[in-house]
Length: 137
Ligand code: CMX
Image (cartoon, rainbow, N blue to C red; front, side, top):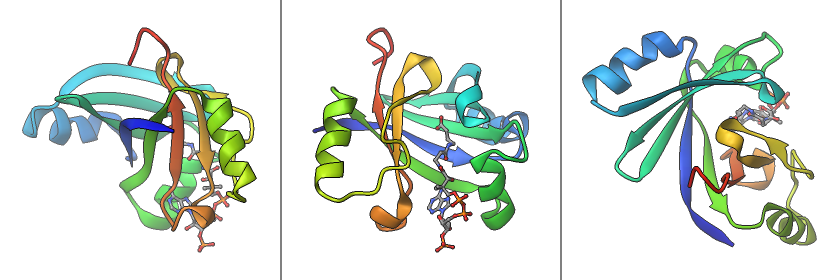
């Protein structure tokens, strides 16, 4: 069902400040920022070989990332796995009693369709399914 780890999401209070470490000190390749209104976040993608890191900055105090930062401070926020068919993946998980935050996919960054699994159903790791847009695998 899963194709690869699509990205690792990291909560930050400021993308600009975080870039000085990830882009400038670690030398990751920065491919720009994008606002994801459905998730109340601004995101920045950085590449490490074939892997990606997603920096998440809240755009509203109601953002799930704002709540996460308030409770935990900056740090690893979620793991995102690639799937070929997100509806089929959600149906399979629901049939196995897994609790979805999104039973219907939402629009994520880079035109991807995404759905989150509740961390109470995934051993405390917020888990995202990500069906990449065909131009951005
Ligand atoms: N990883 C692991 N556990 C998490 C978590 C995270 N990122 N965020 C919250 N939790 C846990 C909390 O620690 C808490 O656990 P306890 O009950 O044991 O204390 C529980 O989930 C409930 O947390 P809460 O602070 O009361 O927050 P809510 O229930 O309001 O929301 C969640 C939690 C996961 C449902 C919500 O954050 C959510 O819907 N997340 C998915 C959407 C999202 O995170 N979007 C941002 C990224 C967007 C993108 O990548 O494009």
